[in-house]
Amino acid sequence: AKSEFSKGVRRALPEPVGSFMLGILIGARSTLPKELQDTMALIGLSHLIAVSGYNLTIITLAIQGLAGRKWQWANLVGTLWLIVGFVVLTGASASIVRAGIMSTLFLLASYYGRKLEVLTCLALGIITTLMWSPAYITDLSWQLSFLALGGIVLLTPVVRTLIPQRFGVVGEIASVSIAAQIATMPLIAY
Picture 1: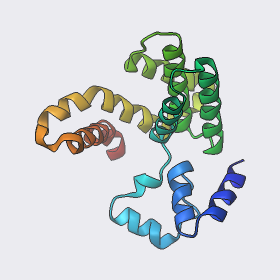
Picture 2: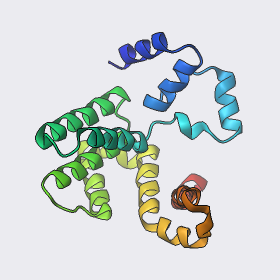
Picture 3: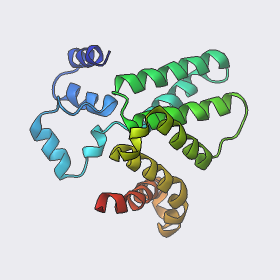
């Protein structure tokens, strides 16, 4: 499925745009020209071509927004299949499995009218992913994924108070990014 999707994107878009879109959509870096990879690394934009839970969040919210309140059951089932497809298409890395499980938990809670706290979901995500594959405990992407999300949840409000309000949305985005960096910094340094 991943190779067919990649071929379709490459047919639809000229190079290097096609390869760049594959990087953004499914984290495929190998097709990017080396010069472009080096330039992105040099200017600090390599994260744009790293697939993450953020990609899945955007896709899930877009589908939810398009479907609205009508056909809730079909909306839920369709979105759950989309999550499964995304996880498979991107290669089911530890961080994407985490994002898929957490997205599924939030969707199910929402469908049944329950409020699911992010930290509760984070704990359930840790337990579920380790039940899925105990080897994830030593996977660096799994560890960074949970640390980054925990940092975003716990540290963003604190960081946001340190950034002047006049920065608006840019301040909000910076707060989230800084919180994730602070939370992952000790592991990255190690």
